[in-house]
Image 1 (tube, helix red, strand yellow):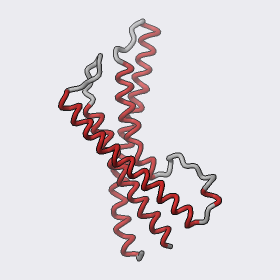
Image 2 (cartoon, rainbow, N blue to C red):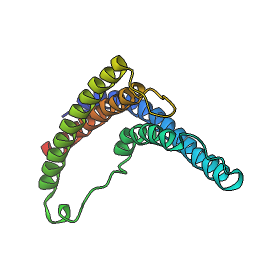
Image 3 (cartoon, helix red, strand yellow):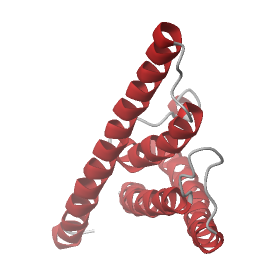
Length: 169
């Protein structure tokens, strides 16, 4: 691959990274909100004998935002768990081949998960499904997970191009 081929790769990487950073920031804000929810619940429960109603529901839906929001940026930043002790014994081309296989497997998983979560979100929207106590609608959270899964697919595709380029060198 020449330098002109690598230029489009770099141009595609920048907007995906920017969107990943913003989704991670939303996830971090959700983590703060989850901590505040727990704090209010514990203080209310222990000091005033008045726990926060629906705190488990709030925590559950906020966890969906927090976890899904950080997926793509964590992958781009190389923070996902990886077992390297097998890789050390393989030559560079073998390592690239295993990386390629793992990326294809991950891409398949996140593509299926994204499509199914979108379908689930639309189904939840049509049925009006919500949480039991606070009646928080669940459809937006399923669509959020689908959006984050699609962005994760974009990140994995970028990694696939990098692995293929590494294998060809």
